[in-house]
Image 1 (cartoon, rainbow, N blue to C red):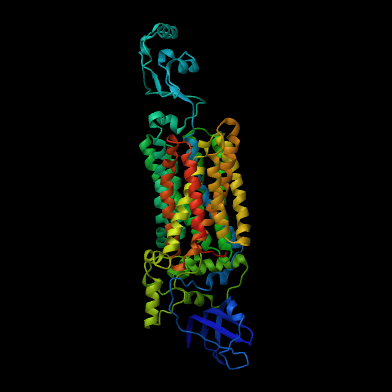
Image 2 (image 1 turned 180 degrees about the vertical axis):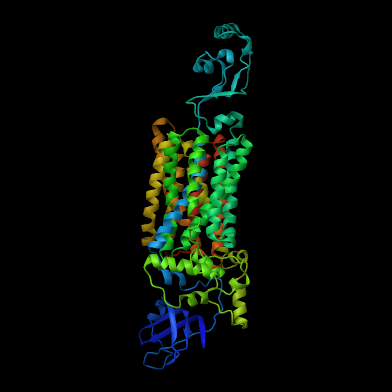
Length: 623
C-alpha cells in the first residue's frame, strides 16, 4: 500500500498552569509500507510558531488535568478562505530562501529594469530644448543670427515682421527699409525655424515642435505613458496565462525591436505609434521581471529583493544622463540604448521559469529540473521522495483549469493544500471561495478599504515620482548634472531603505517617504524667484525625488503584502491601474504652469500629503 499525504495540520497544545502555547505545522510528503512497520515518511515539516500573548498571561482553568496535555490533530481538510495564506512554502523548503542560484538569477533579472528605464527616460534628452528663432531667408544668411532676431522678431521667437524679405537683395536694404518705414510693426507667425548649437538633431528640432506645436510634446510623451498604463494592468494576466519567463523574454524582444525601429521614424505620427508599443512592452517587462524575481526567493528576502530590484532604475538615470551628454543626436541615442539589448536575449533558454508558477500549473517535469538545479547550486540535499512532496502540493485547480489566474508574488501557490480526492461539501465550498473572481474579492467588504486606499497611494505616488523624474529640467539648471546627481542619490536612498524597512517596518517609512517629498514640493513654491535662489529650488526637488524614489521601490512589495495569495497579483494590478492613470496625467499637469507656474509643484505637494494620510489608514505589515 502506498499513498501521498497531501496536507495536514499538526498542532500541540501545552498547559503547565501558568503558560499556554501552540505549535502548528503543514506536512507535505509521502508514505510507503515497510516490511517491519508502516512508518510515515515526512519529507518536509515547516513550523509556524504562534504566540498568543493574552493566553500566556492567564491559566487554563478549563483543563482539569495537572499534567501537560499533548494533542495531535490531523484534520483531513479545512475550508480555506481567500484571506488564509499557506503557512509554509514547499519550494523554499527544498532549495532554501536565498542561495547562490537565487543570487545569480535575481541579479540577472534585475537588469531587465534597465531597458524600460532607458526607453522612457531617453525622451527627456531627445527633446532637449535649444534656442531657436524664425529662419532667415536665403538672401539674408550672411546676417548675424543675433542681429536678425533683434531686428525682425518678437521676444518669444515665434513671430516675425511681416514684410517681403525676398524683395531685398542685401542686408543693407533691410536696414534702409527699417530706418525709413513709418508703419507700425506687423508680425506674423513663423513657418520655419533655425536652432542654435551643434549639428546634432533633437526630436524638437527635426519635427519643429516649438511655438504652437510645443504642446504636441505632451501628446508624444503621453503616447508612451498610455502604452505603459495598459501594460501595467495587462502584464499580470499575460504572465499568469503564459508564464513569467516567456512573457518577459517575448516582450523584451518586442521592446528592443521596436526601440530600434523608432530611430528610423520618418514622421511624428510614426514616432508616436511606435512609442505606444514600446511603452506597452517596456512596462510589461518591468512588471513581469519584478514578479519573477520576487517569486524566486522567499522569507524576508522577498522584501529585500523586491526593493533592490528597483535599484537599476536609479542607476539607469545616471547612465542615461552620461550617454545623452555625449550622444546628442536623438536617432543615434535611440540606437545606442536599444541595439545592445539584443544580446541579453541570448539567455532566453537559460532563464528559469518561476517554480511557484510551475507548481500552481501542475507542470511538474519542468519544476523538478529547476528544483534540482537550484538545490545543487545552493548546496542543499533533496530528500529521496521530494517529487511526491511536490506532486502533493499541486493545487486541485491545476488539472481542471490550466488557465486560472495564479498569484504567487509574495507567498506560496494558490490552493496548495486541498486534497482533490475529498469531495465533501466543505471542500467544494472552500474551493469555490478560494477561486472566487479576484475583482469580487478585492472589492468585497473585507478588502474594499484596502483597495481604495491602494488606488489613492499609487495615484499620488506616481504623479510625484514621474512628475519630478520626467520634468526635472522644468525647474532650471543643467539637466545632465541634475539628473546624474538625483539618480546617484536615489540609488543610495533605495539601498538605505532596505535596512530601515527591516528595522523599523514598512508603513511608517512609507508615510515619511510620502510626506517629506510633498512638503519639499510645496516648499519649492515659497523660495524667492531669481537665479541666486535656483540652487535651493533644485536641492528641494532632488530631495523630494530621491525620497519618493525609495517609496517607489518599496510600494509594490507593500501592496502585495496587503492582499491574500489568491488575489495578490490582481491587487498589485489594481495599484498599477492607478499608476497608469497617473502616468497619463503627468504630462498635462505640467502644462498648468502656463496658467500659473506654481500649480505643478503645488499639485505634487498636495498629492504627497494625501498619499501620507492614505498610508496612515492602511494596515501595517512586517517583512
